[in-house]
Amino acid sequence: MEKNRLKGLAYEIKCGKYYEEQGYDVEYYGINKGKKDAGIDLICRKENQIKLLVQCKNHKGIKSINHENVKVFHSNAIKFIDLNNIEKQFVKLKYAVPNQNILDNSAIKVFQDRYYNCRYEII
Image (cartoon, rainbow, N blue to C red):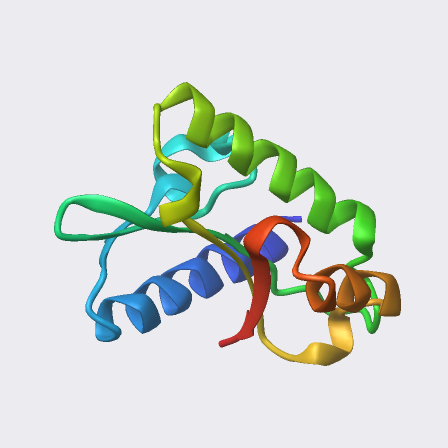
């Protein structure tokens, strides 16, 4: 269990560094909040405005992330946006994964349908 937790933390840091290289100021929200992160691992800002909310998933199992996982992240992100009075049209939701193989076809379909501005990114 501890090994998986450390693997997840390392992946969150890797993703955060990736977004920092893209010019974002990154808050490691998941690391700082622990279980209270509501599924948001990274908050990425440009010019002091939140531009990205990111969920980082480094699962081992093939097709281990399905449409329900994506919809839960989306729901949590929308709650975060609403609670913090952020304008939805300016925030993108990202699901960071190490490869596409961990996404079930139902999850890929949700992303292809551009479900509420939510996309996945391979990092």
